[in-house]
Image (cartoon, rainbow, N blue to C red; front, top):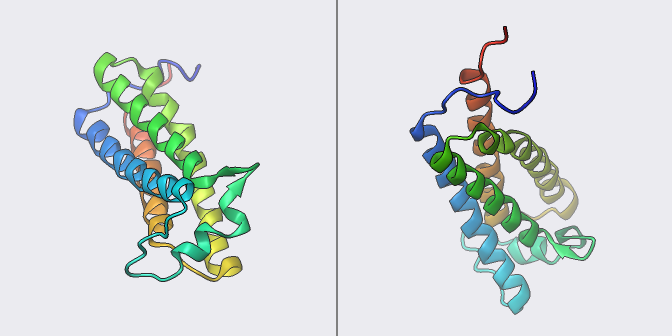
Length: 151
């Protein structure tokens, strides 16, 4: 069976829950992107390693700040969820499944880097990892609970 038309109608509560986590991640990534381009210090609060993580060599990929890539990631997930909510076309919900899986795996890698390589933790990065993990968990619920039966 092709990926399109894979999902039955996904309930609104699940879409809105996922959209809330995508929006939270979007705000987090937006803050980090703005501080990166403005050169401002990150208001770290609980943990003291935010600037160390944000200024490490691991904070950029091909010259692009990870915060900007995160902004794109969360925006694309949020937009897809809102388009699904509006149109009920399963292609928009299906887009979230592999994208959130990638976001989850990448978050695991970035968390590993914070703990074992950089040896500093950033509360915003941890918050993003939590958002990505929850998006992945809810996308798996969406996939396995609302998947159309194969004939």
